[in-house]
Length: 135
Image (cartoon, rainbow, N blue to C red):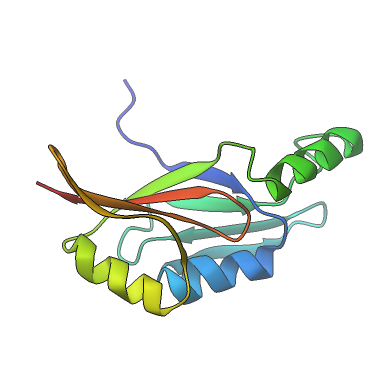
């Protein structure tokens, strides 16, 4: 049976800009940054959790042909690819304030829910990010 997730993928239009956001602002760390020739394999992870990577993937070969990649890039630029990822934190309000100070685009302020406190933000490519402090 399946035990855990290991690799997630988000479409980004510029991998260096994605690094600036996910590493520079959110505080993740680079797991793998390798030129495979046909693509750059760029993954990040939460510090201390290298077994769960996020692939910051530019739409294109080898997973799609050039026409499909162009359509995907158009959708990414509109924030319409429905990509999203969630993280946990011990203190949602403090994390919110820290990210706000770094200029991160917040889409929802910390909100008390039955399951804890969470808030939303958006990466530079329109992907949604949720951050949760569990109850």
